[in-house]
Amino acid sequence: MMQDAELPELPEYRDNPFISRLPPILSISDALRMLTQLPAHSETERQYPAHLRSHCVQRLGRCFAPLERHLSLEVRLSALIRQGYVGRNPNTTDYLHRLHNDHERVLKKDLSATLHPVEITASGFALIGCSGIGKTRSVERILHLYPKTLHHQEPFSLEQVVWLRLECPHKGSVKQLCISFFHQIDALLHTNYQARYGSNRLSIDTMVVHMAEIADRHALGLLVIDEIQHLMQAPGAGRDDLLNFLVALVNSIGIPVMLIGTPAALPLLQGAFRQARRASGLGSLIWERHADDATWNHFIDRMWRYQWTREPTPLTDDLRRVLYEESQGIVDLVVKLYMLAQLHAIQLSAVTGRDSGERLTVGLFKHVAGEAFSLLAPMITALKRNDRAALEKYDDLKPLDDYVFQAFQAAMIRLAPASARPKPPPTPTEPPAEDGADAVLTSLEGLGLARDIAQLLLAQAKVENPGLSPLDLVATIIGKLRERGPEVKPVKPQRNREKTAAPARSADPADLRLIVTTAAPMTTPYEALLAAGAVKPPLRDIAV
Image (cartoon, rainbow, N blue to C red; front, side, top):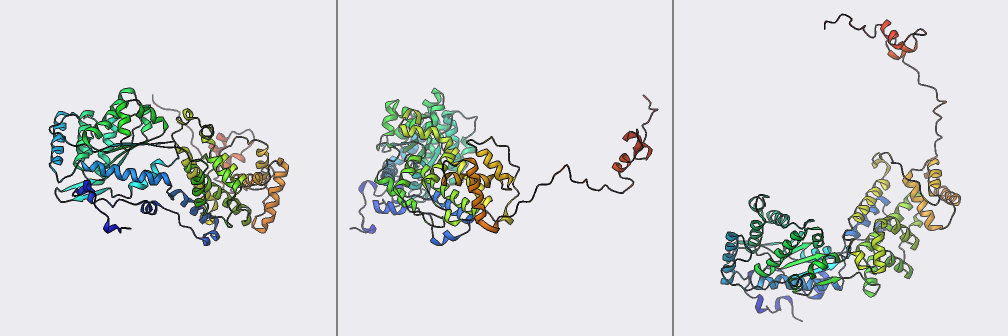
């Protein structure tokens, strides 16, 4: 096998500074190694306090374990960037012709204006998949294998921008996309393009030709437009303008463009021949949710190694089934479910004082999924039915991200040492719980337990003892608290406010309260204060 230094140089990439400065083309094994990002994990961390382990669990949200689809995507992006540079070699007169064409477009404010014919080697590419499948995370992980900018001194002094990712404006505004482009280029190169070309006073025609000219001047290797399904909310004219502009970037300017979106974007890409041709230059990818197959099981096996419970829970077939059933093959959902289940088990152990209770069970996963994924229940149902029309409506997992963030924030506060806990805000009034749970919570609160702790204990009791009556649930929870021993502080009896003696009043004769309460019968408070000289009589003779 050839070493890296012995790899032959492809003739179409030879003597092209825009390509030669890029990292070497990766083999499958090298791509697998460089894309993998696993969380730190140590068996000794299992013995850490609960509030530290709740932080450790969050490492799972940053891990990346590449599968076959990610390796295929890396190959396509590698070719997309390099092939786009083949027709833009700065060592050829073709590059100068491009600069002349850019100047002509700026003068005429027309993207189709040209002075010289040039070779276009750029292609388009689309990645479509439902929310949570890992599209954006995968593309970003692959693109970070490449430098974002490169400085050249020969044959021209310029800053090469290898890739740039933008989010599609919610209303499909071409102007807003241009302003976002100028802003990000300024952040990368410390230029002032947004101030010069991003003013709202400028027309769209002026903005787009300057955006195309800047992309060409800085040898932009790949423009990624994420959340392309936002165009569905745009009016017809705005949607067509943006699509036509992206087509012109590929077909006229020669800038490779990649689109990322949910199935809602498919009608946009298939509605016209030009868009379909542009988006299939290197073969578009449609990422379906994972099937319950060997690839999915490989991912679950790898994820399951990272547990921070006191004792590891072996992975059984029943656990595999419930993980797939509750996530329906969506990677983002199963990772969040695994994180929240561990967090739940750690919290319950900290409350009850029973380390042996940190077990990951089928009932625990179902309970956590019922709480955490309630907002996504219609999406999960659509996945189970494979209802593509319904799935197009659910293109945002942001509510789930917010829920996970809030759950971990609340757990950190609750599990922190008592001296480090901030004073909690007043608990808002909650609606009555179902199935007698409200009565159980009221009973536990009467014993002196905080509302959130009572909810955790009730959830654990329901998972471990399904079908118990409210009275039996209370008895079970009290039994666990008794097992914990002296760590549970005795509950202080509540004071009867009606029988509590009033505090002694001040003996100061100037005390206004004392003056009023000791006044003669039938004397008003005002008369008593007036007689004591505490207030002055009103002025009667006032000139009008």
